[in-house]
Length: 107
Image (cartoon, rainbow, N blue to C red; front, side, top):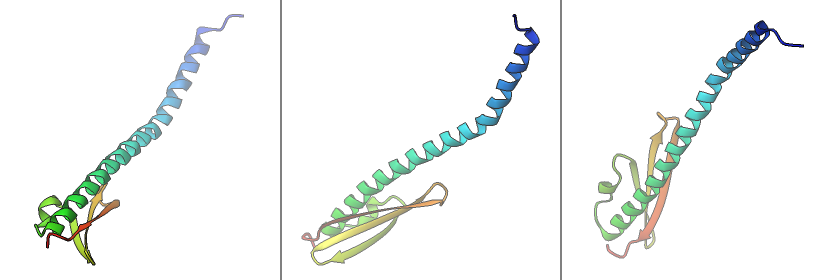
């Protein structure tokens, strides 16, 4: 038996409807993936910034020159000088924090 052409048109309509229903979910998943990659890249940059700020504070230089708009807190723990750097990402939905310590021998 041969299928009629009208049966195929009905199947094509069903595929189109399923695609239209699934497309927003796919776009949302892609958006979440892109946001996660951006947050991971920002975390890596914060780790590097915290290290540079801690080394600068250990030398006695101004650590604020390294943070580029992120929030900075300096903590002294014995001979260690620690820099805690934080930044809001994803429009404030997530706060990333990085901490690094250096020897305070340059003081």
